Length: 162
Image (cartoon, rainbow, N blue to C red; front, top):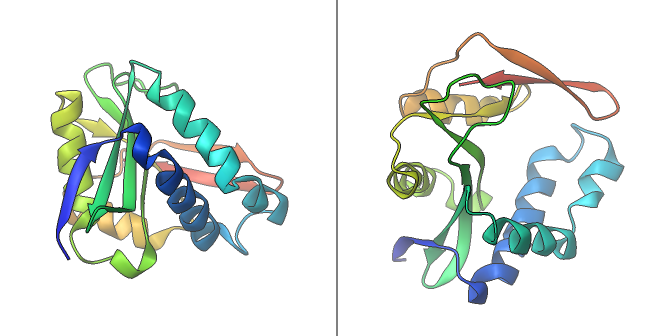
C-alpha cells in the first residue's frame, strides 16, 4: 500500500469524517460515557471537517492509503489555553485506523504537520487512559510537560500535556 500525506480537499471530507467517527469510537468505547462516544457520528464529524477547512488558523492533513483516507491530523497554528507556548503550534487531533497502527502513518502525519504549520514545535494533549498514544508520542520525541487538565465528560478525564 502506498501511503501519502496531503492537505485535506473537499473530495476527502466524507471519508475523513467516517475515519474520525470510527477511530473516536474505537478509542473511547467503554472509557467515556456512551452518549459522548455516540455523539461523534459521521454526519457530526463532517460538519466539523467542513468548519475546520474554513479556519485559516487550522491545518487538516489526511493520510491516504491507495487514495483512501486511513488517518488524519488537525493542527492549530496558535495553541489554545491553557497551553502557554506562543512559539508552538498545537496538534489538536491525530487519528489513524487501528489496522494501520505501527506502519509509520502517525509519524508521517506529525512530520507533515510540522511542515504545514511552518513550526517544528508542537504541543498536544493526550487522554490519561490512552497509554498507546502516550507511548507513541514519547517514541517520536515528545516529552510530558508536567501540565495536566481535567475534561468534564461526565466522569472527570485527565488530559496530559506534551
